[in-house]
Image (cartoon, rainbow, N blue to C red; front, top):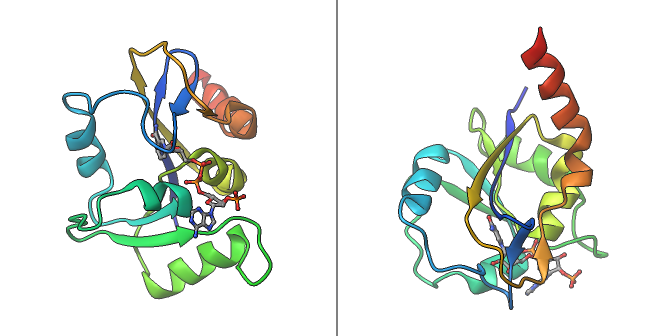
Length: 145
Ligand SMILES: NC(=O)c1ccc[n+]([C@@H]2O[C@H](COP(=O)([O-])OP(=O)(O)OC[C@H]3O[C@@H](n4cnc5c(N)ncnc54)[C@H](OP(=O)(O)O)[C@@H]3O)[C@@H](O)[C@H]2O)c1
């Protein structure tokens, strides 16, 4: 079974985005950690986040897949996961945001990697904790046994 991991950097108030970008300047260690964690993976990234990334992004050996939201003519989360697994067999799938993308893929995610950022300023996108409630409860249960 393909492993699916959501990776996010989250401010103290749950904020993940502002005006289509990260709300905070790139933190020391944040990008290297992301690079290390996602090495060799297939990254699913929302179209709005992709639009905010530099045009010449060095992905290394990662593969990039775009999530266009729930629109007619575009595949839903399960179909996209199946296509990625078929085209990139053996690669872990990383759900890399933004907010709409985390929410859409939350129930198919096996693992959550959150980097807490010391930021309490404004934002217009939040991490959808509620959608990950089942996974978090499962992890809490697992750590008690
Ligand atoms: N802190 C973190 O770890 C992290 C990680 C990734 C992203 N972010 C931040 O999250 C925010 C973006 O999240 P988001 O929920 O707005 O979107 P998103 O999850 O990146 O993208 C999904 C949405 O893209 C839109 N879309 C579809 N086609 C598009 C196109 N051709 N061009 C542009 N957008 C298109 C759709 O929105 P409609 O429903 O409007 O059609 C779809 O639901 C940004 O501020 C980004 O910096 C933070």
